[in-house]
Length: 418
Image (cartoon, rainbow, N blue to C red):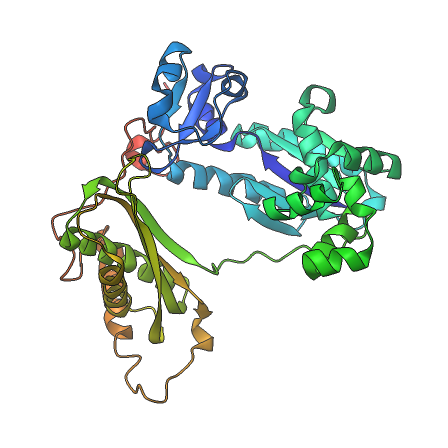
């Protein structure tokens, strides 16, 4: 039996744990730089505040409906996520952390105990130990567990946060209830294709022939179809601590039009990516740099990107920064006010699988230097050592006008009991 644990309105729930005065009140959490809504309480949803709503467009609604607005507090959310995930391991060692607020579980030998009762117990323990409400979906496969979780969350009063698809009758009913667009693993393009041939829900999708699904949706689509039919074709993955891609993207504090200013930002973003690579003992062989203007400005819209292949696999801040600046010079156009840029390092490989280069004999020449820089920055905090093309006096800081304290991760802001 598989289980999917999903934290309800996770970012909002984290804020409410330490500020319970906002329970049963409309609350939203904004994205980086207080850009748009990325988490909503049920009360805010009832007020029809949409997900992704630009904060500047909804200022009047926030004020008129007395909606509490928070800036993203990722330090707090990450720590609360870790606490929730650690509790799950009390119930089974088979845990796949799917996202910051979701995890798949696999209960082996479930015929020897009541999985539903254990799930209620687990849900109660998570609430008692962390204050975070969760929903639990149980089913014979991962994709069905996703659907069961959605039912548990949508009909929380009836299910009390736990729902099991433990019979064929329940599975069939749930599949017919699930619109094809809402099936985990089916994207917008595939849902349009399926709608065009009359497939409206998950049950109708499982009735398609294997040959058609494999031809039009590849082997991945066929595995999903089998999984929805109750055959566990999508396995539980082991926790992967190393990322397949790493990105640093930011909206600028103000619009930038000078190449020199944008180069400085890109160098800083590239250095951040290189630090993340070294932290997980990885290298990359290519990177993507993008630049775009303000999407809310009607005139002079511009967006471009460029992929650069590195001369050899590396995690050197010097090499990655140099290549990122080279890319930004290629795609920069004068006379435009730019609002956002970013660097993504691609084709990441582990340290023990580094590809050597026949024509480059000194590919490790920066390794000791990078290690020394990381040690100094770690010891003294922040980025004490920077590259020459970075602004030594500038510390990038997100716009976070409504940031709550870091209740669990910063000693100076820890909650005090009086």
